[in-house]
Image 1 (cartoon, rainbow, N blue to C red):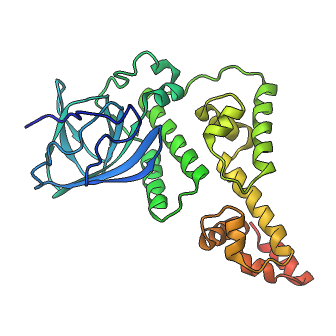
Image 2 (cartoon, rainbow, N blue to C red; image 1 turned 120 degrees about the horizontal axis):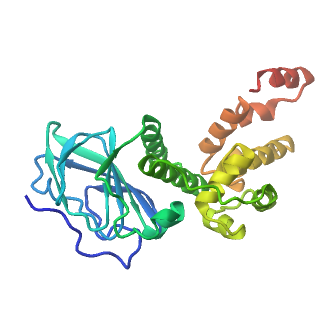
Image 3 (cartoon, one colour; image 1 turned 30 degrees about the vertical axis):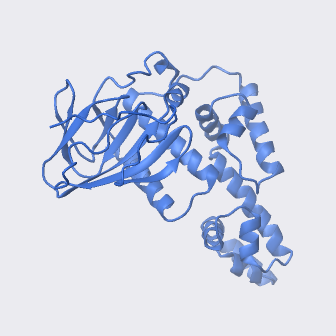
Length: 307
């Protein structure tokens, strides 16, 4: 069987050099790509479809196959492992049972690997010493939930960026065993970074903020910002912004806002249904219900049922 190689890449960007018709892209930026791949075992190109290019790739199989890396022993690739592909890794696959093969995959720009794990900066041409690694159940579930949410149409920028980044951080921790050491910043410096991020979000909570911009504003990496924000606040950057938006919605509803579609759009939610679901998940009631609360007894009852 022929070993798979990708022959070209698109100006070194973290984007598949050639989109296979069997690929479905979920997240695609200049830094990383999250996608899914599916192929029938009777497809003539089964062994060779989906070659690796100039970027490292993490593949999460959903059905079992046998994988042969060039020069390495074959292994069974199934949903309990993540396959680790170094740039230009040649490999082939063989069916071992199910009539189809499907996997989810992450293609990463090397500099993002170095940002997430500075210790890899000297080995970016071949960052993964092993062919595969057991994947924790929690991580696999998180990947599937993220893809399901994306497929449902929830593509809010900050949510997608942060969820994807946290997932990648968790994957790298499972592969390399730990997270980068704390840079040893004084508590005051950490607090100032988070205070600045909070100030940016609070000043304009309805804007579409991006982790790149926030990290640049406080002069640190996106990975460190996400970790530090959770450490200092107990929540994520995206959830903090969502909480700000929901509190603004309470004010607008109290002032008599009646058009929930307009309110959702103004506050930066993807849709009326997204706003309503987020509102209900947070406060235990729908925006329409809250808008109708106008007596002392109703307010008291609402206080009792709120989580």
